Structure formats: C-alpha cells, structure tokens
Length: 178
Image 1 (cartoon, one colour):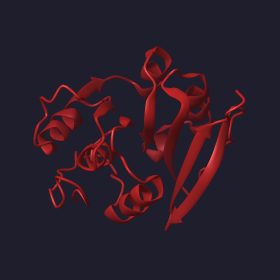
Image 2: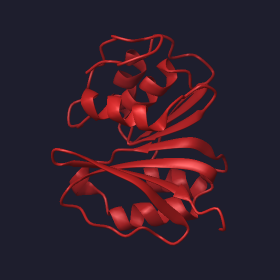
Image 3: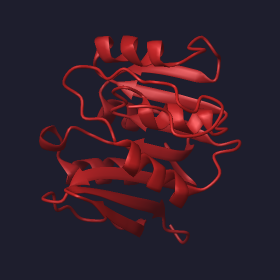
C-alpha cells in the first residue's frame, strides 16, 4: 500500500489490523476519474489507513477530515502522514452516522469505504442525503462489494459506477434541483 502520485508519491502506508484498504489499482482509477484535487476539501469516512485522504492531500487537496471509530487505526493513520500536525488535517474518532448527522460543514469530495458486512448501505446513502456534509457540488465515492445492492435515494444522482473484480465504486452527486 502506497501513495500513487503527488508530493508524497511512493510513500508506504501502514494498514491497521482488521481493515481492507482500497487497492492501489482502484485508487489510481478513482483519482483519474475525479481529476484534480487542487484546493478541495475532503472527508474520508471509515478512514482506516487514510489511504484515500492521504492520496488526495498528496495531490493538492487543502484539507482532509478523517473519521474512524478505532483509536488504534487513527494512530496508525497519523503515522502514515509526513505532517500529521498540519492544521488542514483533522482526526475524528466517531461513528460515521453520528458524524454525518452532526456536522455542519460541507466537503467537496467524500470518500466512503466501509467494512462491507458491518454497514447497512441503504441507511448510509440515506444519511448522506440528510447530511450537511453533502453540499450542492459534493461528490460521494462509495465502495462496496458486488454482492451489496442498495437504493439511490431521491436527491442524489449516481453518475458513475466501476467494477474492479469483486469491488464496485459508486460516484454520486446531489441533484441540482434539490
């Protein structure tokens, strides 16, 4: 596991026990789809190793909030960053649903790679729809295995979907008329 591009290209990332990080191949494809990270604010939910948020920072994102329930995972994540004390980096030990319900800040991109068998995906996409974390132009990346089926709530549009082996990447954006 490593950073694929940007100022930290090639940097190795430690992976917390019990997590399933997004592979380098999927990350490379995802960031190719998303384009420039310059000046963007990122929310990395179920952050684990921080692989997605760190990749975004390396590619020019101005801020990242990492949300993870595991204190140990957050410690490892902080160790993966060359400058973990940077003010643009926030570590939040909290349940993702609580965070989405409580936050008053919106983000440009939300990465969400939950533990496949421990999350109700229908509840999760509903939580996105109701959360202030999702602004008018926010892009939501949701990773799931190919066996999970869930609805796309009113108010969000699925604008891209890619399959990588048994993994699926869904990209959503808020409907403009909402």
